[in-house]
Length: 366
Image (cartoon, rainbow, N blue to C red; front, side, top):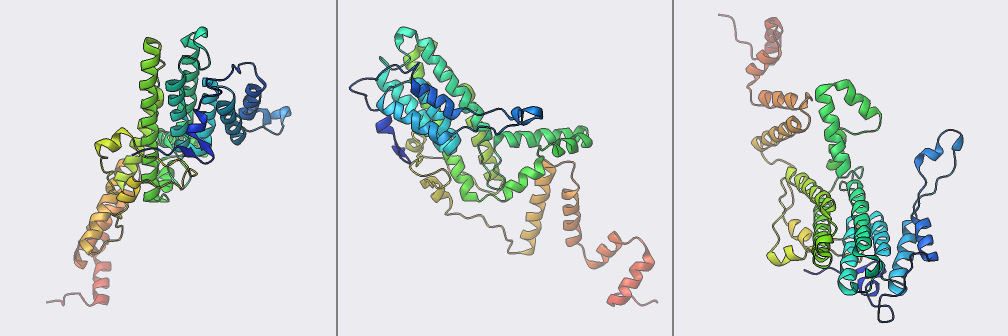
């Protein structure tokens, strides 16, 4: 499988083509750099507090993409422009944008190593610093990228929900305080998962896999070109792996296993990037969709089996909750004859006799 060369109106070929036969000019102290910095700048939240209340400036990612892309295509093959473009693409197009940005970085390193900017005269450390900034920035972005549809929760919110649940095991009041502060618990996260379509989840798994592959390709190229001075992208790789594992877990909870890709596909996961994120469907997603998940039982026994699975889910995710035990009691009652249910539920024999009398099941006195 091959990756598309386009992301909306951006072209990999244009961004990585030579500029007048080379890498263009050094823009380190240019007006363009100042414009990109201003476009991506965002005011901190604390400026709205106290006597310093003011309208906050938000990052303009569309403008950042436009400026950085034009700079790369027409003025300079500069790793700082690559990093800013990748950051903006990640915010705008999420995992699809990360894949595209990392691919731009890898190709520019590969094609312009001898004369890209910062120049080799400035030392490879300057180039490594740009890639390290890119790695750190994308690592921070990945954790917040949405995986679920319900409330657009991602990896960091999932981690938060697990932390809050651990608080509950030690101190239920602490969990309640955390929720009141805006944090989420497992129940809130799970509500968002329930509202997420399985095809959407498959798509996210595919997009994350493509981003991880692009990260690994960039690391391999950097290792070759930088040698022992190569920057490590391991933190970005790790968080992408964790995001992928979470998506696979959520699918597995629905009984959906992602099919292992053929060797060729593993070498280059397909990600269609010439459409907005969320509107992309890969072949892997289409193949998986051929086996839809059935959620409605067809027999009584199957219904009770599903209920037992639900009870086990709540035991694993919300061990402090009464829900699984109420479900198990319902299953137990559902498998009891009427007499057994009456004796289990109602302890007063006189009341039981009255119910039997009404139902006509009371045995006549000898």
